[in-house]
Picture (spheres, helix red, strand yellow):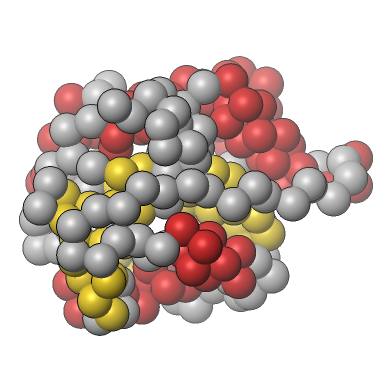
Length: 221
């Protein structure tokens, strides 16, 4: 069974966010630990590669490889179906994670725990200091309406947290920008449970991985 994201995840997320908001006050973050994943049925990897499971070393290496890279601009739809350019979020630190709304266990659990971490951070820093977006990658099913229902169901009402739906044609390119890979399985998807930290200039500066037991720091469905 997948366990919840616990204390170390929260502390790492808050510390990383503080690092983004006040870089002059904090040292360079420690190197991330490689996530562990278990084998899953054959599926399709983002990018069109067929694998028997999500290779944890390859997925982690890919996730880490985008650190230091500048994000390109993409247009997605918000929960009201209105277009939103990623460049709109320049000027403040940004947290980005990927979810799929049909997930019945890990995505809801990590979303709730991310909410707890963010509420604590908002209490310290204020909601106007950073932004958060959750991207629904299972298209065309993660529509604006589906993301609206998902956020309402789990009580996400922070003013700086948005849920965005990409067009199916851009999912692979968008996921690759954030170093996010996923494998389709009979039960859903395997993917790293990661939050990508983006600075105010639109450059990826860190990946923060959730802690599950077992498997550690992964999201397997």
